[in-house]
Image 1 (cartoon, rainbow, N blue to C red):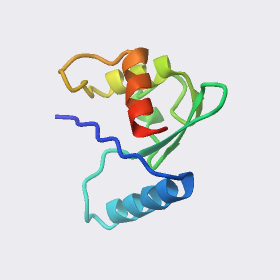
Image 2 (cartoon, rainbow, N blue to C red):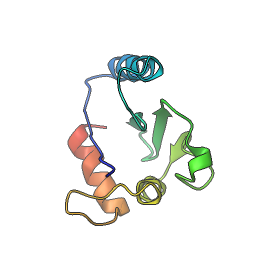
Image 3 (cartoon, rainbow, N blue to C red):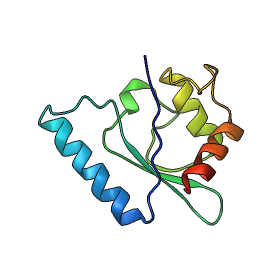
Length: 105
């Protein structure tokens, strides 16, 4: 079963540090991590994602998950990977927006 866990950080540098550490722990087989992403909302509303792993081959989103993405593209990526909402449904752009707002992204 796929799960989504969102953690909010006060600054991008701390989030990047945690992302780097998670990737290191994964390489050492100390944790089993499917993916970890830092989401940064830009002033224009686009969201930049920094991933710990390249999931383009898994079809996680149209064209890949790096760079700026719309909320609809993020929702499509979550749905393509089988990650359900808290209520067990599929993601929409509005739901992604609410999660990002709650996480402070």
